[in-house]
Image 1 (cartoon, rainbow over the protein chains, first blue to last red):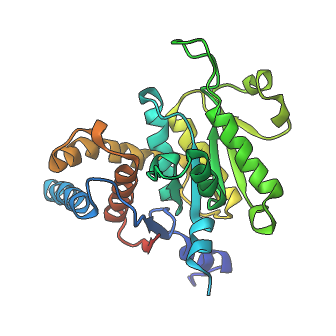
Image 2 (image 1 turned 135 degrees about the vertical axis):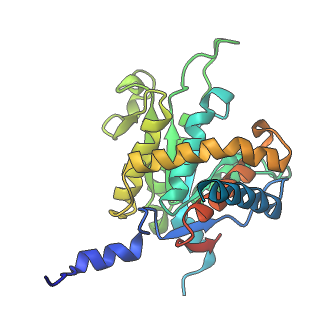
Length: 55
Length: 216
C-alpha cells in the first residue's frame, strides 16, 4: 500500500517535533545568580540518572 | 535579514501576574507552557536596573513583547490593609495602550487575559468587556492549557501537542525539580525567575534533544 504524504503533514513535521513540542526551543541568554553552566550540569545529572534507572 | 531585536520581540511573551508564593504553581506552569510552545517568557522580575524608574523598564519590556499574559485573578482587597493592588490591571492597560498607540509594529500584539472566575472582572474593570477573558479557577493545569490554546491560535502554530500532553510533561519536570535543586545545592525557593526560566529551557532541551535551539 502506497504511503501518501500530504502537504499539511509535511509542513507539520517542520513546526513540531515527534513528541509534539514546538520545533524551536528558546534558550535565554540571560541567567540569574546561579549561572548557566551550573544549571546545565544539574539537569544533565538528573537525566543521566533517569536514563540509568530505566536501563 | 531580520534584526535580533525584532526576532526577540516576535518570540517574547510578557507574563503580567502576581509574584506571591500562592500564585507560584500557575506562574511556573505558565513559563513551562510558553517555552514548550517555542516562545520566551518575559517578566518584570528580570528587571535589575536600579538606575531607571521601574515604570520605564516595564514599558520597555512591554514594547519588546508581541504577546502578553495578564492575570487579573488577584485584583481585590488585600487582607493586610484592605486596599487593592492595581499593578496587573495597570500593566494590562499599558500593554493595550502600546498596541493601540504604538505604531504599526505594536498593532500585532496579542493578549491573553486571565481571571479566576468568569465575568468577575466586570465588577472592577468593565472597560475590557467584550474582550475574551479566560477563567482558570486558580488551577495551574487550566492556566497551562489555556496558554497553549491561545499561543496555538495567536501565533498560528496549530501543530503543538495538546494541553494535557504538555501538562504531563510539566508534571515530569516538577518531579525532577527537587533532585535538580539538590545538585544545585539550594532550595527551590532560592531560584530567581531568570534561573528558573533557564532551567526550564535546559530541561526541555534534555527532554527533547530534537528541538532546534535559538539563543535570545
